[in-house]
Image 1 (cartoon, rainbow, N blue to C red):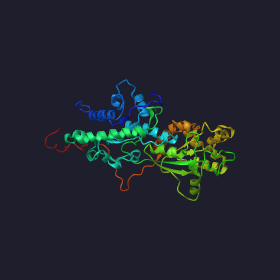
Image 2: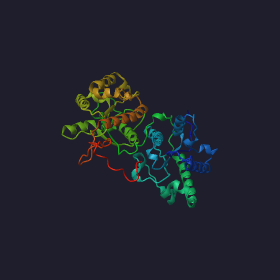
Image 3: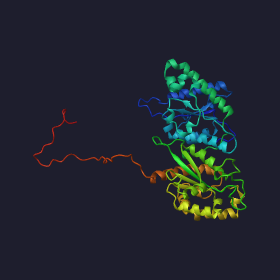
Image 4: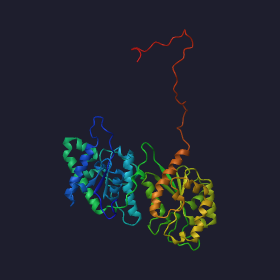
Length: 432
């Protein structure tokens, strides 16, 4: 495992593997050519000792090399992430995992105050319509014409396959190499510990599915509604300002969770529990009932008896696709003290349905007091996945309007009612 102080390759080339060619030819030969050309130009633009230090692509791995660990190490230490856009790219689980792992470095640096880095530099292999880009890719500004008009029109694959576009190819490669070097020098996120690649989620929704959405409800006091003697540091003017890990980040939990959920290719809505329950009591429709729903609960909110009763009613009416996450910061002396223990012990009594649901899930840590910011960002994608799966398992189907046609079924050969009847003559040409 590489140490955090070590810097990896200048760039990680993330690409979608093309299915094997029936003629035995290497279907990704031209991707490897592009990779070598990028490494060659980066070597000229830097003081690197050799091309092997310029870039990484999984083609360099051999059977038995422990490829998941090698991928994770390079994603945790590379300076720039270069996704090679193509229609196949955004339907690849492996590409989605690579994107998520690198982007998690960017988000980690942001939430821990190390800086805001823009180190994802897309390259165009073949054109991809803007409407086909997933949410994580739509937020990255890309002007493909910076590398040439022919490149923006045809991508690297078009340039490399057409001989008369050779000069345009060389120009586009050089400009991309120069962009990689510039970003590596000015906007590279700090290295981090590698993620477990096999359990890393994909940043892209499954191929062929529509837009995905999820709702967060935040149940937390504000600085004006705190229990007596509770320290005000984790709180703000609204529930969404709550930051239980204030000793690790200045960002609110809502912002941390929102960035991570959006990085998983979800659309997100957020509500304040106190404001929502007041609106619903006045006749408003239940918030988030038509989509996967996660409650972020500050157990100090249970110090208010009225709110505790509303949370109990919320739990009793919770849909099967509602989950709960309960932070309990290890560095918060009050949360670890006697009063914190008393209020935390009331979570299971007040919200028994959501507590038991969490304990029976694959991410029981979520309801047993998530102790650190890293633990929270580790468990949240699992909660999102389980909640989404329950939603699709239980949600009602909505077939299109109109006449319902009978389901097709297979039938056997026709039965002739009497020996006098003869089957129709065969079609011209005889039987098959």
